[in-house]
Amino acid sequence: MAFGATRLMSIRKHIVLVDEHGGTLAGMAPRLKELGFQIVLISDPNMVLDTVRNVRKLALVVMNGSMVKDLANSLVGALKGMHPELPVLYCGDTDAPVEFSGPKPDFIFVGPFPAEKINEHAIALLRQSLYPQAIVDGLRKITTDMLTSFGDFSVSEEPFLKASRTLLLPLNAVIPVTGSDHLAGHLLVSGKEDVLRSAYAALFGNDPASVEVLEDMVGEIANMLAGGIKTFIEKKGSSMVIGVPTFIRGQQVSFRRGILTPSLTLGATFNGKKQSGSTGEDLFVELYFERIDPAIFDVVEEAELLAGDEMTFL
Image (cartoon, rainbow, N blue to C red):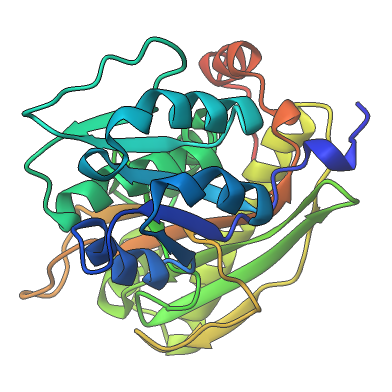
């Protein structure tokens, strides 16, 4: 398979909000900035198209219908004409609903619309745009199949976007992945120490001798997941090279690799015995692709691959 530079999914940093200064959409900015995006706020709808032409690497456009009014149809049509794959979220006015005669927004949110609710839909569109469903399905199947070999884990149904700069749990292993000119990113596994101790004891019949043993366990989970993803990628006719794990201890500490785009993150819960008072998800698997050719992920072929249970772990 040939990979052209123009087909690569790459870092898309900017989100355009069309609203007045201090308006509802402006309240979305802090959460989106946390995820690593740069915000462009446009208070004059007549400036939208010129701005979009001049801003590189657009991830999303969100419009306040009460601002754009009669321009809604023409703006959405022009945006989709320039960037067919660019997600557009339109926040409509209940008193003056818009009938879109041409290309439609990817999601229409009918008010009243508090910023946190719009953010939920915006982040869902960003996730679908940055990580195609085939990647989501593949990661979830690989994670579910692999974690069963380490204990009684339940994997969450839906992944979420997470800022790539913060470690969620105390014990972490990160593995860089590359694939010539068409793939780059990393895989990160984070786990709770008490849960990993319980899983280790259930697996081997004795307590781990040190925290380093638990680090090795996290590293092995990461290695196996990376092997599964490598198999997944290579069955699509591409290639992937797995790096050496780096171990990091620390929860809610900074993890910076010059990365701003959010990661696709899956949570898992350990169903075995763990310390009392332990709440929330016990392990996270975080996949980040800086760039990847979406042609590797054919949805029909991917469904057949997953249904055929052909995954192997290295």
